[in-house]
Each structure stands twice: as C-alpha cells, then as structure tokens.
Length: 277
Image (cartoon, rainbow, N blue to C red; front, side, top):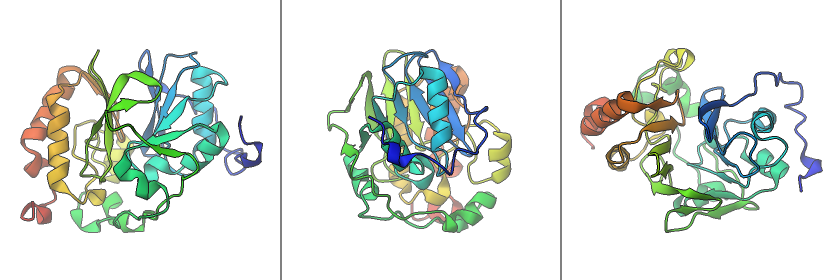
C-alpha cells in the first residue's frame, strides 16, 4: 500500500506532460531525468515490471508519471539500483515511500545506501568540460534507504526478473552492477560504460552518441573499471541501455564497445591517472 503521508509536493507543479518513457525494446524502456536514465523492464500494460535506478532528486513525481503511462497504476515489483551515486538514487527514497516496494543493490554497495559510507568527492582535474569542473560540488553523502534496501543474491539472480542476471562491474563504485539478458543479449550497463561524454556539458546537452568509459570524475578505481568494460564487451551485447546517453544496438555498439575495451587506457583513463594505472 502506498504511503499517503509521503506525497510529493515539490513535484506537483512540474509539467508532467513530457514525463513519458521511450521504448528501446517491447519490454524495455527508459526515461531521462535531466542527465541520467532510469530503466523500465516490462511490456507496456504489464503489472509485472521493475524499475532500474531512480534518477536525480526531485524527479520522483515524473518517474511515477512515466511509469503510469507505460504500465497503468500498478507499482513496480521492485527497484534495482546499479550503484548509489546521487544521480542514480536521488529520488529513491520518495519512490520507495510511494510504491512501498523493496530496493535491491549489490552487497558491496549497501554501506553507501544505508547511511554508513560516503563516496569520494568528485575529481575536477580529470578534464573534459564543465561537468567535471563542477563535480566536487555534487552530493556524495550516503543516503539512508535502510527501510527498503536489500542485498542482491550472490548467485547473480534478480528478484522478479527471471530472465535477467547481474554482473558485478566495479571500478566506478565498489558494488556497481550491470543487468544482462542472455536470450537476446540485452544489457543495462549503468555507468560501467556510457554512450555520451558525460564530463562535457555540451556533449550531454546535444546527446552526441558514442561509447565512452565511466564518468571520469566519479571513477576512483581504473583497473577495476577496465576489467568491468572488458567483461561486458565479451558478452557482445546486441542492445545496451546505459546510465547516461542514448541507447545503442547492433554492430555500431559492438564495434565501439570492443574498441573501448582494447584501448581503455588511451580512451577512458585521464592522463594524470595513467601512470598510476
């Protein structure tokens, strides 16, 4: 039952007419919350659907609206979190309060989602554009979702998603995950790799599509990040929905992801981190 004491007054005056998910496949859609995507797994009209990530703060009402336009009034069965950075869990608490459903994340991400640990401050020295420069001011304090969040199973299975499995893809964060469906090689990559140069505000604004490594200003472990990209490239995905940027598919996706995996040091790692790597 929804918690009526947690309505969303700060969202009610926003224009909801454009809060609508864009379909990637018949059972996968996404909605962009300013600069980051949330995913909807489930066919339109289904009562069995799952929300992936929760976007930035103050987008709860619009995410709910996008979900209702696609699925009707039925709440999701669960919320899956790829990782706990502010732009992926900003609206998580209000969505959990509204839907009253469980949230699942990798065990190594739990401390950041239960108020115990903070992420490193954004690194403005990575270069690339305005977003990098502003990154030290982005929120890194832990969010407390203790009432709702649960660790994902160690065997890779995902509650309520029988065809999907999790892939541990650390580097961007310790407990970062991707979701993969073997049947049609569909990948939800989170920020393990993305399809826009997230460091650049201009690239984000125009959504210039190209496979890139994880957002550099928030990636502390480049060795793990490289291993994660190689792991995902080896899956040879046919369709990919990433945390930032437009979905990609087919040969274009596969070639660019493979190129990134084999040239990760030159293409993804900031110059001043390459010696450390």
